[in-house]
Image 1 (cartoon, rainbow, N blue to C red):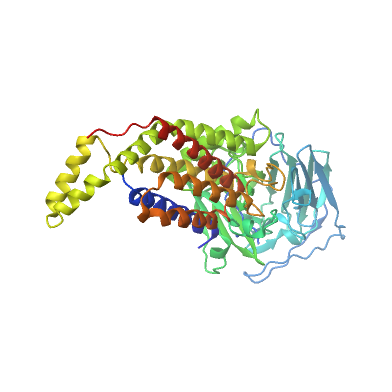
Image 2: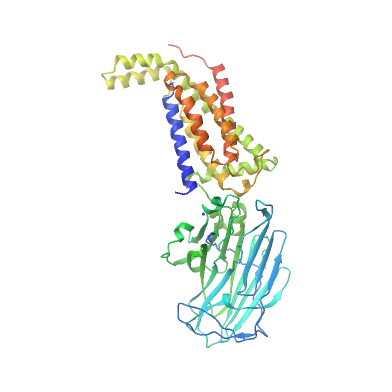
Length: 530
């Protein structure tokens, strides 16, 4: 069971304990490739000509092994760099692949830009079959046929006359790369039904606590309308099969970042997820056309709803987190937090304001519930009298109890209802704080420099426990239930010590506001009449 599942179980236990308390109180995961979605290819440049391209011959091998020998003059290995305001991408002509990719707008804990490609990693390599012979194009040194500040084109002509060209360009919106793959074959060459595009190098872990990335390290793919997420532990199984069908996209993800290959002029025909030297890998198979080019959008960036939806409508499903029925609530909370942050620069202050808004929104229900609890407390003497009188007649006991409730307009579950209605907000807020990149490295004050991870000194959980102690003390008057005052706060501190600091801040403010709320209700409360 991963940490997210354990945390979710813990939150369910919290809910259970709270409900029980209300009822019993005086009544009254090496990197993984994400699946890729299709995206429009408008404006992508076409492949260049191959004039003057050195030739290389391929040598037939056994079907399970592909190797290539070049008979053309040795081409030196060189690198090319494309750069924009948002990214820096470095390519190698050895395999015409991506070897470095920096996101300038996102930082590592040491302050350097996030580097998505692991050291010695090679992404977007290819293989194919020509005349029944496997050809591993990652073993070829391609010629750089054209290079500008926004694009680079690689090409090679094999000894059998097959021309392969790969052109990379920076997308105008800075969200990744446009990749054009061009195959041109002579009449004597028969291509296999498909060729493969690989993301074999996984993704770098970017968080200070590597377990944060390890728990979410996975390969993702979109099969029709269904998003498949295969975590690294599952991919360790060597018997995972290739999945045929209409593949919209595939790729690898960590906690906050995604690399996705999205064919834009046609759907892929199969996907194979797995591990490559411990790194999550994804192989996308595309139909090999006799002549023509394929356009692939390569998204490399944050897992953020708005950005992903702008690249391709279905890609934002990768950002959906938590229990599916709660996802609308999660998106609503995220929208509200981002809206508040648009004029309040500190996310800690945003969470405090959010806590106040939620408390005000639920105040009418809370007021009604707490008033019902106080009425239940006042009815305890009469309840005990009825229980003593009808202790040998359960049917009559239940009848008289309900009659007493009805006479005084008391709902025995009224104290639980406000809490139950607030739980979806609590769970959805946890999902937002724990998984949303907008909260990544968001500071509050002093020692709290990241609201998305736990408080390193456990100050907020301790303060939350103290506030809960006083809040519970105001509501618990039955001596038989006094133990809850002393048991519940330490239990909550233990649970919350591993949860995001932002969630601790929310629950701390919630309890402080609840103390004020109970004080107001105590002042305004009128005893029930006999």
